[in-house]
Image (cartoon, rainbow, N blue to C red; front, side, top):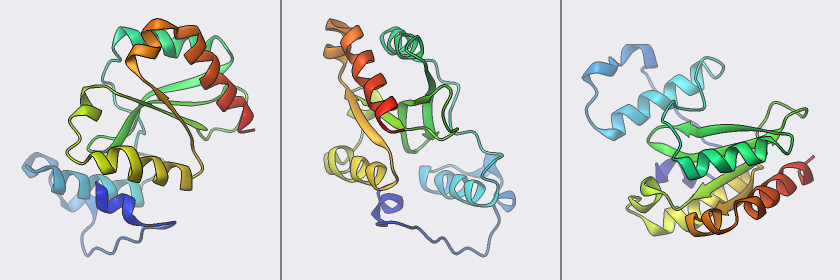
Length: 161
């Protein structure tokens, strides 16, 4: 995934294969699965879901509900599995369909990231270059004062308009 984030503004993928030619059931490693996902996203951007059905833990689910009550739309597990997915993406409910705020967390997936540099520098920088505002919702802060975290996220969301 770090290679996908290396481009400053644009990533050009050249392939003699189409995503449909790669049998998903035969792909074993994360690299080939990610390659197929990139090809699918490039060739069918509207057909690919930007979120996965993995349930949110109760703490983040509560935070998402608090943010939604402030007039924002929250998408859980935004991104593509194995490709820099983050837990919440937020946009104004009545605004453009493009998400505005990426909420990063210190969940198990983040902790399992093998490169701390990618986690704290490359991925956030790539998201900011792509136009996202970032908010780091650390578990302890969400637990101690979920209203304050929801207020911060909503403020960022509506400030992006």
